[in-house]
Image (cartoon, rainbow, N blue to C red; front, top):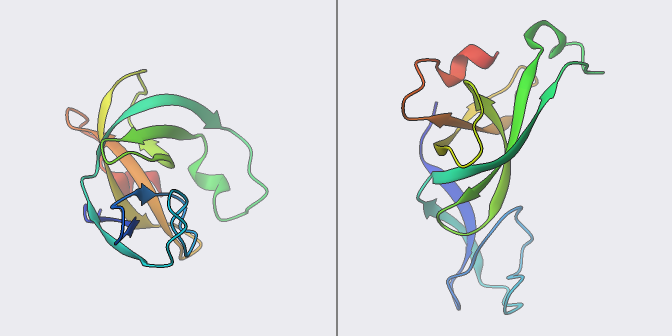
Amino acid sequence: MTTDTQLETCADCTHVQYPPRGFCERCLSPNVAESPVSGSGQVLSWTNLHISLEPTLRPHLPITIASVRLDAGPIVITYLVGQPVAGQSVRIGSIVDPLGQSVLVARSDDSTATAESLF
């Protein structure tokens, strides 16, 4: 798992946002670029995905998907490794899913499971 979390950040007002928009949602500046941010945050809520229309994901079900408020500000939707707990501290990283797309994954510091175990 890559732990370098890159999110769109405004060069004018330093607002961090997700998902990327190409302009700052706070000050409307076009001066935004992806920059490294702390990948730490807290689990807000989660759900378990038991059915998928995507054939490449079916062998990996069930998969836990969580909303996480990052310390940098935005709320992100991620896959979650391990047992979810509301308020749990997690670190966000990214991996490549079976479809070849880079996806966000949250993992608690005390989890023994790895992000790569998702797929």
